[in-house]
Length: 406
Image (cartoon, rainbow, N blue to C red; front, side, top):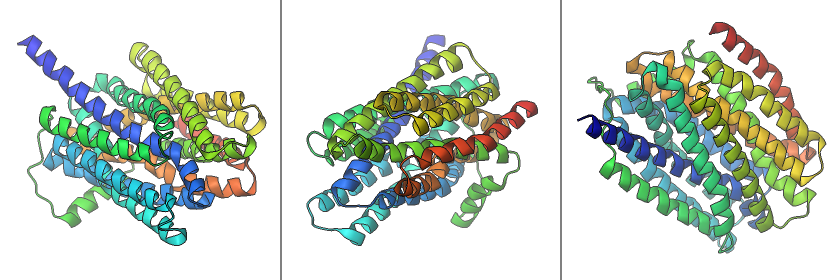
């Protein structure tokens, strides 16, 4: 009997982590390719940033709503919906870019098509991270919560490792081909989840809510005073990452005179190395050493700050890449800590809504990060990294308050 339970638990964790990894793979691949795809279709830097910012806004609004829906519809169903939406949305996004690369649509029509397709995708794929985090809360005890969320973070980083390198390889076929590959991968993952993932052990809410009530309850998580400091910390962590990630591809092209294809490959390898660093940190510090969540946040801030300082001052591609490794390490510490602390502050009945809120932190950071970063980049190539350095001041204060509170 114990063996059967252990096998069921292993299957749960494996499929859940594969779903998270597949989504992260697609996200990182898209972020890596966007600067090159944008340049290849004649888009300005801020237009590329607009795509990410608009879709991130929709994701941030949808994420806690999907978390709320998972409390009555079930985590598994919401996971399948999110993966299916990601697959179909990525296919649509790739088709619009394909039309732009062939000159069938250009200018404002192309930008509008890309923004709208990405926003539609974000509205549905926001279901996946929220349901995955809530499912993890359902199958872990409070004592296991940080390690459980750490596994979600590790799966996310695994996808982040595979995404850039696979994108760089597949881009050799064509710049848009990796998007089609992601559509197929997430589609297969949706089928796998529907067929083999056991239902979550959660006790589903029996209360039926209409759309207005669901939206009110889900979006109400943003006003919850118990989570305000965690939300602000998570948003600034991911905004810092967005400022760096969305400008580095342009910096490689302009500073080192790379072609769009070479830049995509170089940025992909750099982001892959950062993800490996983040994954290693999570395995050693979160899983093996079992560091408490507040310590992880306290370690995240100086790592990201040091990376920003390096990007501000260095001229070498190798040192720039080393700076991104530090940023990746900091993000790897911060992400599971935010998710764990948020989960532990609420009751079991609120896990879905709060998981959605915690999952929205990356999207909230990517609302302003790409747009502000690309705007600053047009003024001076190093100004985005100066802004990251400035963000470390309020982040340090928030981290200090979290440590005191705990």
